[in-house]
Length: 397
Image (cartoon, rainbow, N blue to C red; front, top):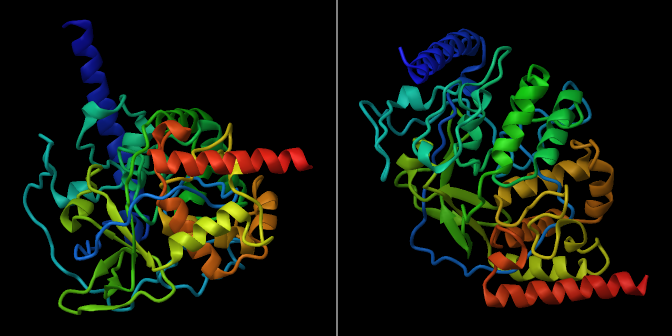
């Protein structure tokens, strides 16, 4: 037998062993965590809002699926009463369909069943040729209830609205967040327990793998007055309510998939649409570039001229606005009180919920990437003027 054949056999046996461990441990997890199927709809009648330039205050973002636990301590923490951002499982879940048989996504030669797609210990990898080989913990998780990272964050690292976008986020920042989860300084669904049993080596490999992924536009931001009526299913996923029509968006951010079936398949090529109230982008831009009339500081000071990160400070441009809003809220109410918490608490102290919505919407509308090189001319000009303003402010001190 050739050396490469022996290696392949060993990898297959190792994968089988990990899967057996994960399947046994997954049975002890709540059903909501065993089956995380995401879907929600594209309200295609709305035009996409053109990309705008930039920001949200030192919003140190990170990793993990949405929120269900959270702050001062697991026992004391109370779910914020903001249903559109912090969904609650319904008493009688609505079920739209039950997909059976082999499932395909455009451009992939792979085939999975829905049961395999929902196996969070062994998430699907539709396009393995598009990234470096996954570390075992990303593809299959590990012992102690550690689930496959790609299940929630996807094989692209871009995630879903209920989880963080990790593509291109600095490894050192991801590791810092894992440490905060482990210490109880940051609460999040599943992440606290998983981080406790995550080895240092697995954490390092996962963080470096996600950091090497390329960020991209994942959820265009659209300003609108109305959105489809939606519901939250048993897995805390927001979906359209068939035949129910639409309703005023009010003071909310609603994120829906561009293609429901592909979102349910965890297709890393099919993103979302983020609907925000009209006027949010202009308000967010003004708030970010001026500090909201003294309410806070310019976000570029910490997150860089185009909000694509600065040193160990994470990129936030182009990330999910719902996720960004939740983090701002967590910093303000103390749910996130790790190493970055003290800095961010001062940043968000005077911000209202409307301010947070506007900031999150504006930052989400910005192109992800590496500073001005990723921006269109109009955005680059705005970013440059912001940078100049930031430098002037520093000189004035």
